[in-house]
Length: 441
Image (spheres, rainbow, N blue to C red):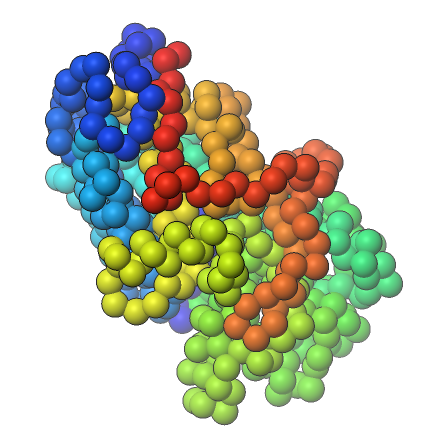
């Protein structure tokens, strides 16, 4: 499991894309499509991304681009965006930052993409964020909850987060424990990078006095026995993990060997029961065959999941996968990719009929906070914040799915308060294709 890590201006009119009408998915009206910027022709828009398609981080994460592509393929059948097809080019970085740099150079300099979308991973995308911003390439909806993509638009004006950041997630978890488990002795199991650091920062705002131990693992070191033993020795009867799925499986197997049975709470990144069940089976060489060890564990959510068969977004995404997907079943990782593609479609529609790179960024800043979609809570996009969605539910793992134990609560980084989300869940439009108006500036 080496190198596993966490999982997300010209003139005003030109900058805003110069659209004459709403940015629906049908052919444009009132003007002609032009080759308005790099990666944009009259007939297509070229987007790029990097993912671990091979190697130790491929399980789960390699399914995300298949969801993105399925959504765009179905979108293209319905006319694309302003009559343009979306061409989605994704390359394998094997979760190796050096390889991320190589494939990103290829995407920008050889493929000449219009924008990067959904580049996956904190350590991997960190290796290319400066390059993308220096080249003026929109770097949208990074597949990582690091604060780097959203908290500093002055340094990274082209980059935007998408999923709930890890600090906000930590705050929501901390508040829940303080309210529901005020007497718990809490241990932290943390990835030793900003994934773990941001999560710890958020959770300590609410339960610092309840934390009896904080243990860190280095991605690639699969022996977590010392960390789990230390949590047990500290008397932690409630353990919160900010870790990737492989280390959820490793922590569970190690705790089983040690006879250690605390209440577990895994952050969203590490809690997919289908993936963790497969990893448990593999790591235990068949002695543990499914995710039953996770039953009763708590986690967070910001998207509908495949077990929510009555959810209208899952219904639509299931249809899209059946019509335009590849082999295999719809998974939560493919739902993640389709959800990102939906947001990207909103951004391209808002950028107008003949989009520019700078106009795309300006449109996200100006109207992105108003977009509704599969995510449970509003985005935080503005000129001052490129942060993604703002809230999460608390859920309990049951079998291969979960049940909600606390509805959506929203917050922001720093000392922003946590509040109950008063909005209603959005329902998908026809064919799950948004119809955003062009932002005119």
